[in-house]
Picture (cartoon, helix red, strand yellow):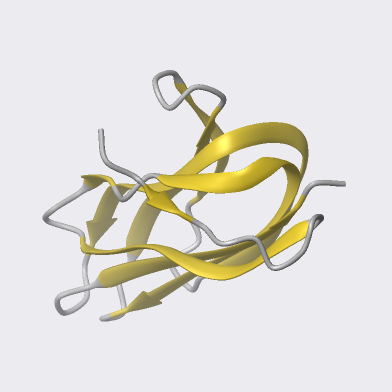
Length: 116
C-alpha cells in the first residue's frame, strides 16, 4: 500500500496536513500518511462544503499500516475541531463513512500532531 510521508518540522510535532478531501459518493479510506515519529496527541479539524445535512467521518490511526482503529468519529454536519490524546500511532488517515444532503458535498480533515 502506498503512503505519503509527512515531513518533520522538528522532533516533537508536525505541521497541518490535509488528510482527505473526497466526494461523499467515493467514500472509504483516504490517503495513508506515515508520521515522522509515533504521535499520541492530535488536533483534528473536520470541515464540509456543499452543505451536507448528515455526515460520518472518521479519523483513523494504525501502528503497522495494516490494522486500523478509529481515533475519532465526527457526526456534526457543521464541522468540528477535536483533540485526540493518549492514542499513539505511526500512520493516520481519514475515512468518509457517509454524507447526505446538500449539493455535491465534500469533506476535509486537517490534522496537526505532537509526540508528547
